[in-house]
Image 1 (cartoon, one colour):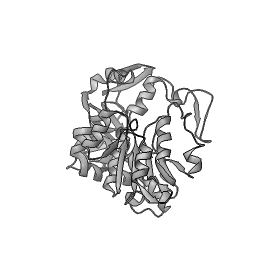
Image 2 (tube, one colour; image 1 turned 180 degrees about the vertical axis):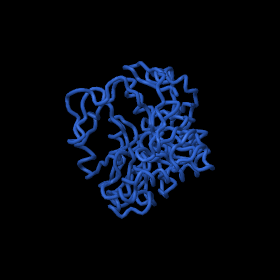
Image 3 (tube, helix red, strand yellow; image 1 turned 45 degrees about the horizontal axis):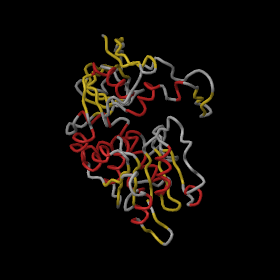
Image 4 (cartoon, helix red, strand yellow; image 1 turned 90 degrees about the horizontal axis):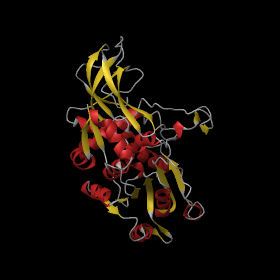
Length: 362
């Protein structure tokens, strides 16, 4: 059996390549792809050639990037982590034929999986399967941001994703997919205020259509606006927590300026070019601020036994049940046939096409 795979063969070169779909051995199952969501930030970094894995070696034992051979050289054959597939063959009693589930196997038309080694999250019948693109990985990324905010406040005694935002003033910098899902999580879990900051009018319009308040950071100084509005005590003004979701230095600098003294930025961004313009000698130092990276590879220390990826996926399904219609209408900007993937990726990388969330249909 053959399938088609999206392959980045070099900077700016994206192909749709036929590949052997793999043998269905005992204990495994095969899915046919229904939908495959595109993560513009991470995936386009491979198309543009800006991902650090393309140029240096990541020493996993030391947790360091070091000079040497690329950890992920071209051609990049596994791109993407937001797939929804229907089981068409199964040689395991754990996964029934016909089941629709979320996975992270990259942009390809079919896949053979081992249920012991790989995650398969069955989607409930009452959920639009297209929204399942968020269930296995993207939604947990955002939920993990809230989990880090909760751990910052409660340590290891986190009972709910709302523990870090409930009753608190929350700012979200950026209005891409990660930012908007994170903002919806915060609103759903009881934040007293949620304000999304982004300079792009079209992105702010999407946030507002989702029921979120917005500010233009290029208008009146948003730090002055929010610190005037959000008063805790004398000399104590600003956001309780800021979720930083845009991978640019100005965004992190803004996030630090929005915080109240001793507040925390929960950083979900990927800074492909570093963040040289961040000024740590100003608000960061004088207000005693904290910066926590909420990268999805790990939950906060001490919470892994109770907050695994399965629980974060379950939280994502709850969010999609509550806001799915609005997310489908306003966040998903385009659904295109799988055959158009090469042109889509090159157009996005060269900014000939602007999309918030584009989905490949298998």
